[in-house]
Image (tube, rainbow, N blue to C red; front, side, top):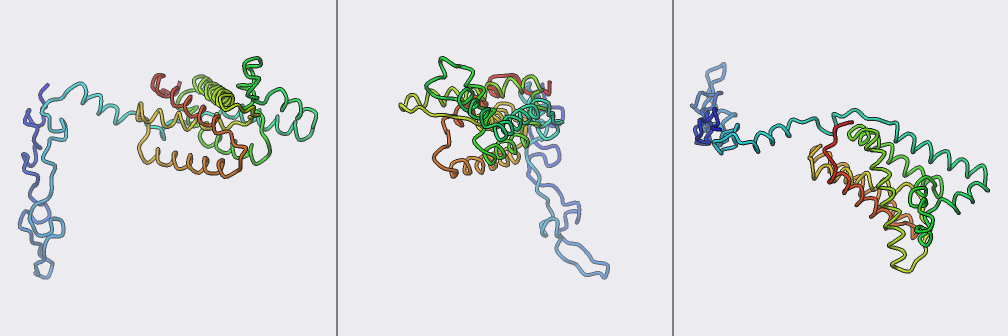
Length: 273
């Protein structure tokens, strides 16, 4: 329909497309008078007597028409954003508790630790005959610092994403991210003729970053500044893991990230349910 503000012209109703309006501070004279009678150039308009104005109509963006696409764009602009969603913690805290419990169990019971490493870690050559390893590997860690790094990142982003997607969808997405990381790790190392033992939540952690990036690209659920903050943290996290040494499973990180991105891209818009 025709834009009622510009009546279909697409021009700003204030300046009529001229790009400037009369300066309200000096009434267009370009001069101001002090209390003592001295005159000086108007600071608002720099002495020109005119103030800059957008020549296009703000309501229809210069098209002269209010289209369905424009209305959707405006509605999306004022949708509830990422930072306005209340966090949820049920699934995130359950994962953190499980990881800490199993780590402490291994510390105080070496036999249990050996059993977990032998039966729950993701061993490249065993994934097809023992598929539970593609999920269970995420709950055990190779040391305190390894666990602490993963848990600190999980507690930073997990509750926010869980709040945005809802606990059920978040639980499903985390399972898929962990599964994607484990599967890509096993297949990648098999393709390189390597039999690698992989463990830790970092596949799921990179899945969270994939979800953040995918949700931004697909639905713009938060602004660019927030995305830069998340990617900065991702860069720091990735740099730390790369600098840690030669035992970093980057196949797992890649698989988790791609799984998280795919989940955010191909599923419906996050709604908090």
